[in-house]
Image 1 (cartoon, rainbow, N blue to C red):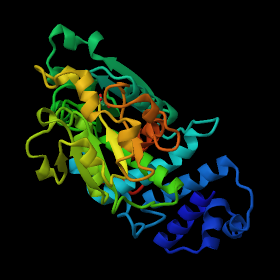
Image 2 (image 1 turned 30 degrees about the vertical axis):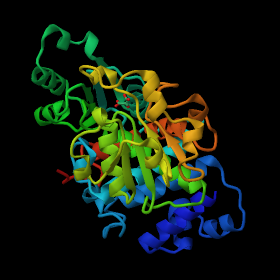
Image 3 (image 1 turned 60 degrees about the vertical axis):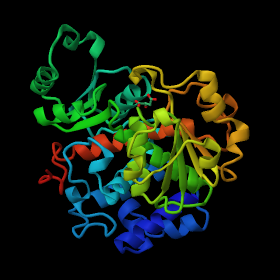
Length: 399
Ligand code: MLT
């Protein structure tokens, strides 16, 4: 309730409208906000309706021709056809997607989780690499928005019969998908497919390159956890985040370094020398090989899995030694800032990079919240990227 009131106040400030006018526009109920402040009860469905109203208002250049002030109007708020990586996004575009995800967080907590926004649209999830949570999350996101969602698994596809990636792309295109979500084991493969198809393409992880929706959902989970503690809401200025694990092979690390820094956080990366990419400093991250030193003063600790499927050769002496030096134990977590939050994109290898007693810490671990936010962020991405195709006013001329 406090969060919603805060969001309404910020919304009114950004858009220069009074709280009375807000009540009138959103619910045809002028005294609504003052009554809310006085303790009026609020149903979950009304909260979801209000958040949706705010998101739509700011997305719609017609009801809000000058833009929200915080974000440019209409398609200028997110002038990309595809979501290929965080590297292509401006800070305000990242914040825009996070804000667009907020109403979906609320909707997903209701018994009826359906919105018909993408009704009639076809979304193809083309996964050339194994995935459980990302595939499921995109599938649920598309279905909750009312789209027809089709999953293509590489193991059952013509790729196994020798079809080239370009031919697969041309085939998917001919089926007139309205959005294609792609996961591929090769860095750059998603960009290649995007250049061959006519519809929006969303990168669900390409090799060691990027995993943009993971970074966005991590940012949303962090935003919610910090807000819940009453600490911050808008961005991560002043926050120290340590990402520890197999940085070399991790697309999650790369997208998160870019995203967290864009939102104002300082990022440390920690890995054994063999798993630290050369030139990570050029991305603005501070490298560490000593985990205890990296943890000192860290407000957030993001643990990563050893990506053995991408390793050619021996990168670590043994899982046991790795855990000894780089595993997040309860004792080691005490080196971080008091109340430091723990994150992990999953899948977790308990007892290797993270101990169960840390992963399951109710007040510190936000790992399941990350999964929850994944659906909302992917709903926001599918909504925003299909607005042009759906003819949403203000989005017609987007690139
Ligand atoms: C990924 O796809 O990169 C995952 O979300 C993280 C992992 O596999 O470790």
